[in-house]
Image 1 (cartoon, rainbow, N blue to C red):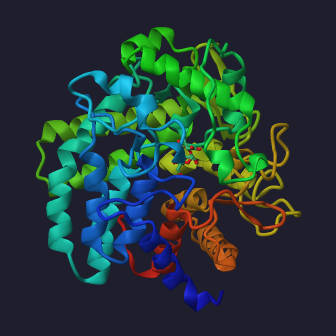
Image 2 (image 1 turned 45 degrees about the horizontal axis):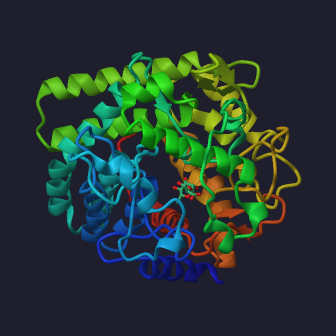
Length: 446
Ligand code: 2M8
């Protein structure tokens, strides 16, 4: 593909996956609407049509739970039951309560939504069209985003630690990452009925989580359903209970975006004071998870009361949260450039693998255990830019775009060969490409 064709191809991928008011994550592997995918997709869509981009987030928020939770999947009623497992029937019993929207999963995912919503306005302003409507949209969704962040700051952080608790690796979005190996090993699988994995019909099994991992994923879904998704019960009983530093860092930035949205929505000062407390608490919580042995941030297993110290891209959480200690930023950049990540001499492109090649759990073809993820590179690029690391950011962007010239818009890439893996035509890959390509024009507050 010629560089000048990327924009048109990326737009075509989003069109192909457009289901009218929402976008499926990919054409076959993921026929539903995923929470954090949709947020990234909205950023890409905004470069094509800011009204449609706002609609993407609106359609997700239409399925928000009463308690503020944004479900990790909104199921497509048209998708055949065998197209994805576990599908809506599997989650139905958890959604039995009257205040829970039908056709949603009971989990959640990292809170990128406020960032995406604000970016729609920034893009509208850069394009010189639709800014007034984008502002109205932000005022409309502000209370929902506030409720979402409040849910994360309370039900998912009863300790007031500033860190988000998850009940399932799927909630981290980095499902089979070595981040969770230790915590998952301690989960004893109870009785689960036979199940058939739909994913293996679409993707090479070596590129997907193992059967061992899936059994634990499905067992945890059953435990969560069994507790009716009640956070207090899950805090007591869920065998997997961990503090997720990546989600927590994203929440810090999302809260900063929420403060800007609060201004547009003319929200009461009381709300803004609360959001400021969450930001402060989040940065403090991340500081406490700094692991000097690996110069990265570590997740925490609340059940085993110990650190989960695998070297993965989630460890760059303080860079993503921004505003942390400058000596930590220096350490993070050194690790980023080192052979542990983007400086590994064997890489096809100097782009950080999802798990460090030096880590024992590293596997170059297996999903979150090693492949390079364009969507993660977008997050790191955006964070580097906001930290004033313009040169590194520019390099990350240009190599990421070079990687996409294969025209596959892969879900993830083999780090040493650059081969596209997982699903092709993955929506969020196309979306971040569109944002990179339009980068120069979009202004943001530092
Ligand atoms: C992957 O996760 C789903 C489960 O949620 C799956 O493997 O079936 C992850 O990469 C996740 O982060 C992503 O949101 C989802 C859709 O792209 O796929």
